[in-house]
Amino acid sequence: MAQVTAVSSSPTHSFSKPALAAIRLLAGLGVEGDAHLGTTVQHLSRLQRDPDAPNLRQVHLMHAELHDELAAAGHTVGPGQLGENVTTRGVDLLGLPAGTRLRLGAEAVVEVTGLRNPCHQIDDFQPGVLKQVVGRDADGEIVRKAGVMAIVLVGGEVRPGDAIAVEPPPEPHRPLAPV
Image 1 (cartoon, rainbow, N blue to C red):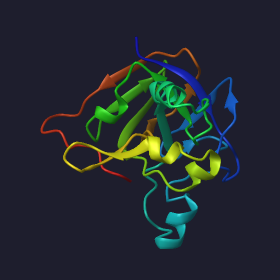
Image 2: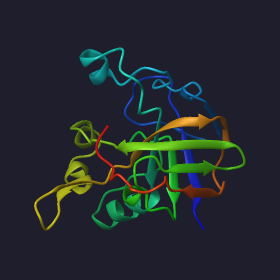
Image 3: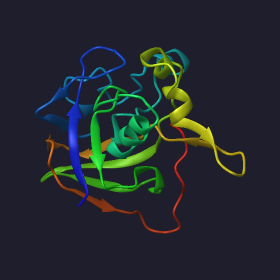
Image 4: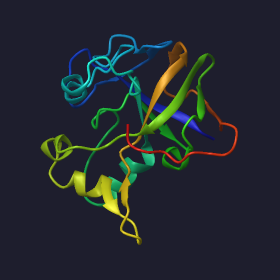
C-alpha cells in the first residue's frame, strides 16, 4: 500500500527539515510555514536567476526506499534530512510521468512537476551521499534519485500513515525532467 511515512517542514532555508506530526498544504502555494511556500520561485539559487518564475517546487517528495538504499551504502539518512516535505513508501516516484496527481490523505492533491536536481549541499550534509543520488545509467544518461517536486492543487492536512492514490495524466506521458 502506498503511504506517507513522514512529513517535514522548515521556516528557514536550512538544508534539512525536522519531521512533524502533520503539515498543511495550501493550494497554489505549498507547505504552510515552509521557506519554499509561494506562487513564485523560493529556492535561493532560482531567485537569483528569475524571481518571477512560477514555483514548480512547492512540495518535495522523496521515497523512503532511497533512505533504504543509502543505508545499504553505509549512510544514515532519515526523513526530512535531504530537504523533503513528504516521505513516501510504495510509490515509484521517479517512474511517474510529469503531470501525475497524487492524493495525499483525505484531502490534499499535488501534481508532480519534475525531478529534484541534487546539488553539492547533499555532500555538505553527508560526504558521499551525492554520488549515491546522482549517477549514470547504462546509456550514460544522468539518473537523479533525490525525489520529485510538485505543486499543490488541493490543500489539506497530510500526516504519516496517510494513503497515497496515484492518478496518471492522460497519454501521451511525458517523462520527468529536472525542475
